[in-house]
Amino acid sequence: MQIFKSETFENRTSFLLSASPLSILYRIALPNVAGVAMMTAVTFCDAWFIGQLGTKALASLALIFPFQALMQMMAGGAIGGGITSAIARATGRGEQGFAKKIAFNGLVLGAGISCIYAVIFCVFPEHTLGLLSPPNEIMGDSIKYAKVGFGGAIFTWVFFVLSSVLRGVGDTSTPARVMLVAGCLQIVISGFLTLGILPGFDLGFVGPAASLVICHALASLYLLAKVIRSKSLFIRENCVLDWRSLTIILRVGGLGLINSITIALTVVVVTSFVGRFGVEALAGYGLGSRLELMLIPISFGVGAALTAAVGTNIGANQYQRAKLIAKTGALVTFVVIGIFGLLVAFMPWIWINLFIDFDDSFLFSSTYLTIVGPFYGFFAGGMTLYFASQGTGTMIFPVLVNVMRLFVVLITCVATVTLQLDIQWLFIGISLGLLVTGTGQFLCLYSTSWNKTLKWV
Image (tube, rainbow, N blue to C red; front, side, top):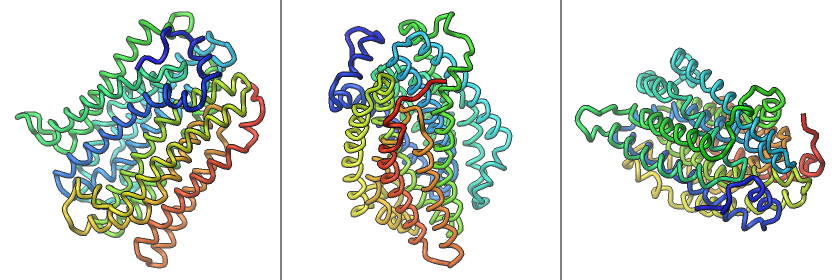
């Protein structure tokens, strides 16, 4: 989808400052949603491929998935959101040269953080995964997956950072197209490597990790070449370290890192407590929580576009218009995902039957979806508002909302184990956490960051 006839800052900025909220959602958010929908499809297919290897393999995937999701949330939603927000606000203020400096410094920052991930999961995988107190029989596969998947972390980070740079200047179609192509390729490669369809290429449980690294490497190289060739962002005079650029990115992205950690830590905490109920419970919960975390990319699809739209309008001091755009996007995700959540709550087998036969893990997963599913709309709408809030440049209150969600879930988990309650009470705590996310992020719209002019660093 070609959004603008002329790829200029001026055309994109004018559109974001004057078009109706629904037009922005259609022309800016829709391509992004299509791209992240493919990411969701990849997550689904990986789970299906692993499901063919047995219940223990699914439990191993449940162990590694929170960390994998954390990295993608940090790269795309936290640091990536900070980059998009900073570039959008700079263009809204007419500072195109500064926006280009932000783009380069964002790439440097992302590459640096990727190295930290590689060291943690390639050198200390046993210690890191051991924090979840998993059963010993599933640790071996998880460690192998971590070394491959996180060993190529730099490609994942470069891919998400470059996508965020393009979104910051209003171009969501290019990252979306790359996500669609890379996602299709990743599904094919993952299937071949995991199921051993071709002789000599049977990687088993590690197959999805290898396909992830391969496809993100190809996608990042393509985006880098395209940005250098046609976007005039990484030209020599802009490629210098600039502390002001890094500070503005981290004003949003730094708090976003905390937010990403709280989201992943929520899953980690629950995974650790669910593991006390056995491998079948862990496998069943893994299927349910995977569906929950798959909603974040969908919310991100709308929210990341809103980051650029809100940021541009905030930069131009159009606060009420920025708030209207955010509310419109959140309402769309609340309704769409809310209907989906009710569907899986009343008919959980439409999801579970895709991966496992009827057994104990089926019962655990079914119970989880029945209790938690009705609250998916609140979670999706809240996360959309969180990403939209990144455009304001101030993220203290939105991050505190997700910290509060973590405490609600943690208290419920501790109470369930201490009082020796049934696992359903643990799932009820997760539902309350989703409700906190939705209502809390909505209330943040009435904080000062949406109603006053922010000073730049």
